[in-house]
Image (cartoon, rainbow, N blue to C red; front, side, top):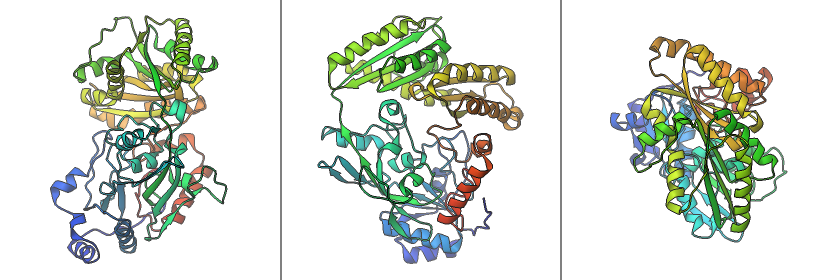
Length: 469
C-alpha cells in the first residue's frame, strides 16, 4: 500500500472545520478522544486527534472533502464492537462516528425492504421489522449494540447465517461518500443486479477503506412462526464437530448450529448471573442447535431425526428448551462467551473458517499447535458454517512470548486453515491485527489487485489507512 505523509489536526484545522460545519459535531477534549481510542480488539489503544459526529450526509461529504484536501486520515467508526482493530485510529487524525446517523428511514412492506442509516443498532432493526411480521436474520453476538454500518464493513454473520446467510446476502443497495466528498448509490433496490461491476458487494466487507456508508437498503423475509432449541452435550469435542456435517448430509438445515467447548461454557456460567446449569465432569463440548419454520410438527420430526444422528456421535442426554425463558437463557449463555473469555484473561481471538466437514481436523490441529507452543485455547463458534472462533489465552505466558512468539503459533493455525480449504476470517475482518497473515491465504496477485482498487477509490489513502494490507 502506498505510504502517505499525513497532516496533524491543530487549532487552525479545527477552526477551519468549525467555519464550514456545525461546531456541535466536533469533539477534541481528552475525555471524548479517550472514549474513541479503542474497540473490542485485545487491549489496543490509539488516540484520534478529533472526533466528528455528523448528523447528515452533507456533513459527511464536507468532512471527507476537507480531510482529503488536507491529507488528514479518517477512521470511520460504528459502535466500536469490532474484534480486528478496524476502528482503531492508528494514524491519529479524525474519527468519523456514525452514531448520530441512526434512523430507520423507511420500511417498504410492499417490497419487503428497509432503508436505514448506518448507526442503527442491529437489534433495534430486528425488533422494529418484527412488529410487521418480518425478519432480518444477520445477528452477530453483539447484535444488542453493534451498528448496521459496522456489520456491512465486516460482512458480519452470526448464529443464523447457517440457514439464512450473512449481511452480504441482505444488502441490496448502498449510498456512500467517497474520500473526495462525492455521494452516490452503488446499485439498485432490486433482487437481481447484473449491470456492470457490483460495487455494492465490493463495499461490503471493505472495512471502511473505500468509502463511508451513509444509507443502506436491506432485504427482509417473513418471520418464521416457530422454533425448537436443543442443547447437546458430547463426551468428545471432535465427535461434536463430526456430527455437524452429518446433520446436513441427512437433509436437515438448522437455523443455527453453535459449538462450545467445555471451558467456554464453564467460564460463561461463572461470568453471567442468572444462568444455572449442571454439566457432568466428562462432558467436553456442546452443540446448541435451533430449527425454525412455520410448521411445528415438521420441526419436531426434524428434532427427532437430529436426536438419532447425535446419538451416533457419543452424546449424552439432550436438553430440549421447553419455554421461551429457557431458550433465552441458552442463547444468552452462547452470546456471552466472548465477554466471559475476555473477563478471564488477556487473549487473542482468531476467526478461523473451513468447510464444515473439516471442523474435526481444524479443532484437533488447533489443540496440537497449542501444545507445541505452550498456549491454551478456548474454542467456540458457528459450527454450521465451519466458523470456529479460537481464543488464545495469555494466562501465565510471559509478555515477551506474547509479543514476539505467539504469532508463530497463529501462523500455523492459519496455514492449517488454508490446508483444509479455509481462510483466516469468516466474519471479523482483517483490520489491523490480522493483516500480517494475509500473505498466508492470498497470493501476491490478489493483494496487488486489492491495493489497486483501494487506490482508485482513495488515491490519497486517507480512509482507514494501515488496515487489511
